[in-house]
Image (tube, rainbow, N blue to C red):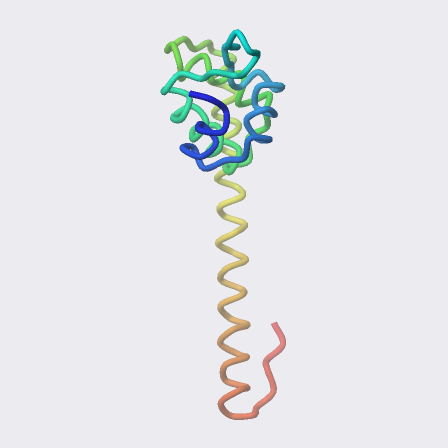
Length: 123
């Protein structure tokens, strides 16, 4: 499939696909006319790349783990890096939960203020 079709199916921009190629996360074949051609499996790969970026992984980390995902080959070093990435994500999740809980407290105080006119509590 051509780059525009892959972008539409994967829900990303053409520019993102070109960036993934620059970062060696995605590969294409070229047609006789020089147009990028991708296999159908590229949709799943792009969606995986998107999920990993959303989780906060860098291009380098993603590039390092893709061979494991694609062909099942892992190394002890890769496992250590993946565990470190998971720990980092867990820490970010904890920070987000704390932020959400504090926001809930502020929302409750603001709601009480709106209903009763009493000042919002300092938190």
